[in-house]
Image (cartoon, rainbow, N blue to C red; front, side, top):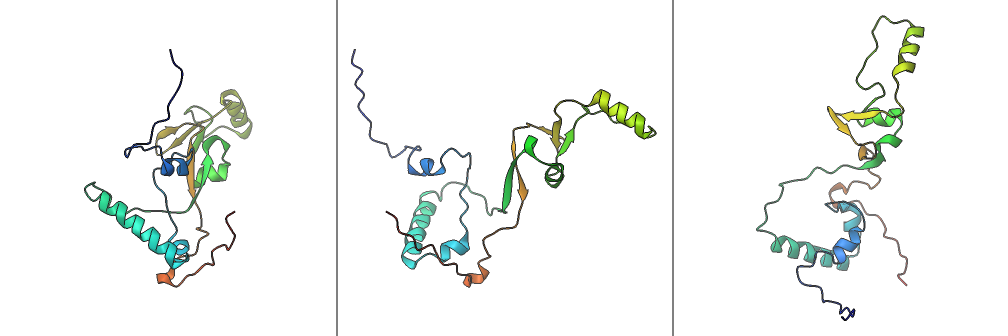
Length: 164
């Protein structure tokens, strides 16, 4: 039995090529490109980019696609590593008492005792009535650090480093 393996040439249907590798280990389904930075690139680069975008658009004109997308800058957080303020900003409730709520007439001492008896080691997390996995990644809206393109007037000098 031979153990020699001959590498196969990638097919035209190979989805594990350079784009897949460029996305690396992320689970991203889309690549968002800042217009301000793209229009700040040299004209030759812009021409190549537009040619590639047009080629892809032509190749998939038969595939139904969304009319528009709503993209916002955000920061990514792991649910069980978030602060109380971050949880609140993301609309997530941490339930330390498994759905139980103290009676409203308990004194401060009784409330402390109630909490001590019922508090769990780790909360369950909920958003919009749905339980979240504690290790799930969620987004919190953030200010976009890239300036708005301002009808084509915003220019950012590209880094002039060399590629060696």
